[in-house]
Image 1 (cartoon, rainbow, N blue to C red):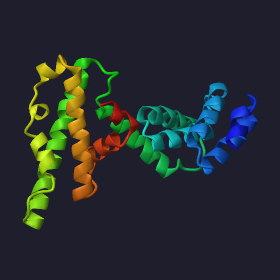
Image 2: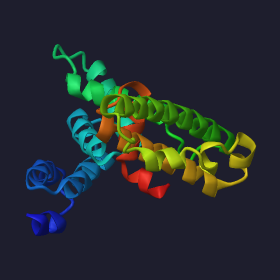
Image 3: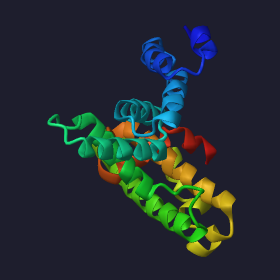
Length: 211
């Protein structure tokens, strides 16, 4: 199947046939490549925009998800369809929009990125404090979050805006603390809600590895 997909001629009908087959065969990246071929020629194809958006969401590519699903929603609304837009796609669109609005992307101007980093750090610290208190009260034993507690006493937990603006390496270090906190706290204290849930999704995305 993968060989056939890779050797397929530039035929939109064939690409539309192969893409879902590749998805079901456990080759989502190859499927996405075929959807992208179709979109290059048919940028208003709602079905393909939705399919590509689902895949990008699964990959943790939230900017791409938002771009694709926003276009798909516009196509749906313009079609005056009597069928409601799928609720799961709306959930993905909403979540992606929120994530893009808080993500400290390296594409942002330095001041905006640092503002988002500091907000993420505040959120993660509150999540850590709440989880740490929950574990301590429940078990009466030394918290299993002690390693994180030590990190929250270190430089990355207190570095100020001015210092962060002048040090991209420290920006990445702070975000690693944020992502590690959201990940470990969720494992110990359960799934978070609100912006902490969005930060956890970012922590699990490929971009977190860049921090």
